[in-house]
Length: 138
Image (tube, rainbow, N blue to C red; front, side):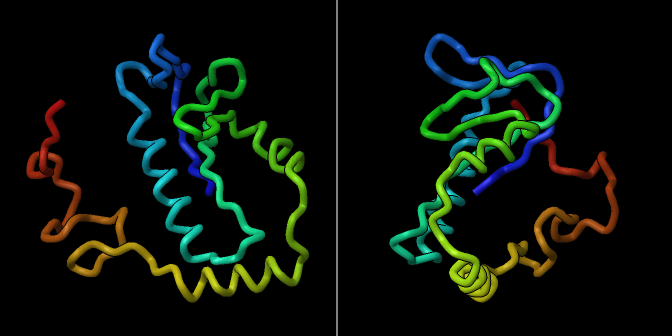
């Protein structure tokens, strides 16, 4: 399960092993991709399939070119293809096609409670009116 993120600047690893982008912890991102990988593993019930979480970072520098935090590799996106090629090929083309068909049937598009796909406007909002948008306090 690959989660692709766009950041500017650089990521930093603190003394406790936590990853940060500026003053924002990446723990929620790492937890989300781990959760998604776990959900995919539940759906793709094949003993030969191991679903691993990975965060691919565009734009920002990753400490030491690759870091593993809470079991999640965080890598520069440009290094991802070579990293994936280093993994052993476990499944043949036919099995990959079968698993892709299973995933299409079993995974459903995320939707908000009002039926609008996630990533769009929240329920009750007709436009991007930032004054009426719910404010998140840090």
